[in-house]
Image (cartoon, rainbow, N blue to C red; front, side):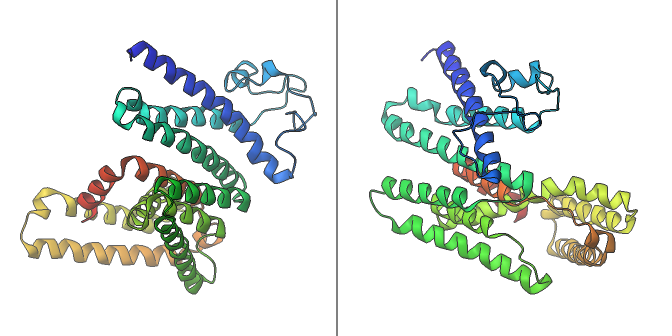
Length: 330
């Protein structure tokens, strides 16, 4: 296949993805209202103006209209073009990953099946992420559908053997419930919602038990990366300089501990750094737990989107991610 044809297919896949993203916006938003995803046609939530086809072109129409309704000039949420663009990028990502199916005949049929499967579960995952981020709500119809689709596909892929994906599903669900139970014992509040349990079940069914725990570790890392900027800003605004200083010291010690001149040094130096890490880490936890401003207005980012992203990352690049985790944290 020529490079021009490859790029043309990729462009087509991206455009299809943006159109699907427009539909996913409708599916997600109408889940809150209970309306049909087919009727009535899309309209402005402010004035009820029925959106014309030429005003409903993914991403482009929002840019042309300046992010405003053509009729009443009310602002149109940035959610629409963002979801459309991200869905298009996601479709292009999967296309590029499975593109060798067009030039390697021996794995052609396998990837021709995998590509639409991943596009379907990615689209459903986008809907779950939209509702979770927007209103911190995950609908059972979406999460259970994701788990069922993955379970059925994996059973088909394994020649009718449903036991491995079923075990992965159960382990994923029980692991998340265990973490939620620990949160309940500590603060009398579930650490994660039941929607996250269903998502974890889906990850277990898709990846299996071993890779589920790697995906869970990746999801926790992603969660921390999403929360840290807002968390640091809140500490700075509240003048919680002691927490910031201790956190900075913990980060510096961790980086030093992983540097070659420490990791290759004698065991005494390694133990000294490890003890300092533990002390600073425990003290940091104490400062965070006892900080009143953080208790009154905790920093929150839904865990579901991080779980879903980690599922796809591990499914596509599991070996690379495992090697990185083993190298960096061990």
